Length: 275
Length: 285
Image 1 (cartoon, helix red, strand yellow):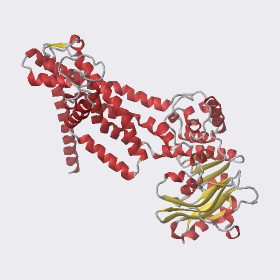
Image 2 (spheres, helix red, strand yellow; image 1 turned 120 degrees about the vertical axis):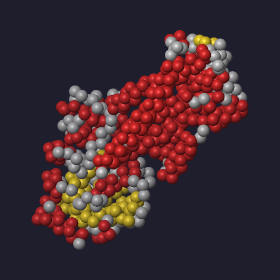
Image 3 (spheres, one colour; image 1 turned 90 degrees about the vertical axis):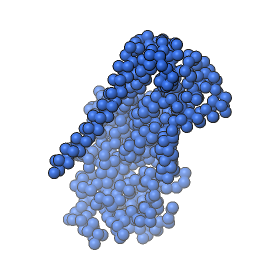
Image 4 (spheres, one colour; image 1 turned 45 degrees about the vertical axis):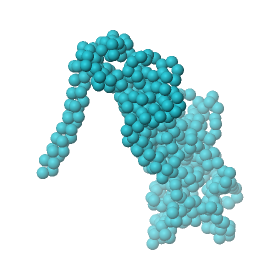
């Protein structure tokens, strides 16, 4: 399934990070996704610098979630999809034989639109990936790792006295932070967020945005959103995913967030490709 | 016009519900009234004598409990495997075929299971009439009920749980043991109940394989160790006995059988709730 990717000379600007010096945390080279011959994503080149927040902006249904799922190979779960091109995580291609997708998914965290809470206690939710996942973590480390993760998302003070209670007793905003803690407990370098605030009230949404800002640096974040304001608040750079010829999603621009959102440039980009 | 239609619909529904309840209540009342004279604590704890015309039903009750416990012990693990095959491991076509097979299986008349047990277990394997043969046959009979009930629950687990768990790096088999099975255990309990109610009341499957009318107490061993059983006891008394004492005891035994199934249903209700609660609270650390 691996296609030769275009040479560096004729690749668009999206394919390189600002300085172009260090290895990008995530790099997509000519990534296309086909469903039974029809392209959902077509020839996406994108490089995400280590430590930055990159926002993917674009209309719904354009393939932003699909793009995100290619980065941790959650796309493998969808039957009948054909992924071509290359995805590199910290320089390592991940669509090659010998790559264990379960280990990869433990290393590349993911936060979904709706908080997904397992019907177990708050504590058991936080350590769910540690306990059942690809990295076997010694049992005695679990409480400490859970506390660290809960502190990192600012939930520790709210839940420290009720760790044994069902996680479903938390508010939706708290649940989303719990999901973030559950991912952070695995200590990923890269976190993918698929419209993580769309189910939340504005205040909880701001909390998640603030957390995203606090997490970047040691971690690289890729955030899908359809809200340009959110991108403006959190993103270092933003990429516009828009339907290209044939309706398949493609990255039409990737630049500093302020540039992309200035003076209706985003709207222009979106309308341009549709027309 | 529309309200009229609404009323007719409501009335029909209510009539059906009341009718069904009335039939059930009628049977229950008839059973209690006719068996009342024989019902007592003694009836439950004493062995029958004089071909069922005197004494109690303790060994029939014990035999039935042994049979359904064996049936469950056999059917539950196999049903878990089959349900996972249908819902998780088989592709769409394989799953559809297995599902069809299970529905057909469920439609097989119970006497055929009895004959199968007679030929394979009693004769060919040389067990003779045995509680194990009867339990196995009953287990085979209730297998599709358990499987379909569990598979439906597994299918009903929202996909986002699977995605979230895989996203945390859980392998497929870990998702099965840590996400799918804990969340669908209620389906297994419901299926077990439905199956068990049927297994407790069936006569045909145990007629040739496990049950005798008299001369057995508790089994020791497998070969030639038949049991007494409630449905078979009722069957024989209803068919053969003209003794008035036997007729009363027949109804009393029928009431005990109904109460047993109903009681197991009630017992499993808190169990089902508790199982849910456990799934919710996990094991703690």
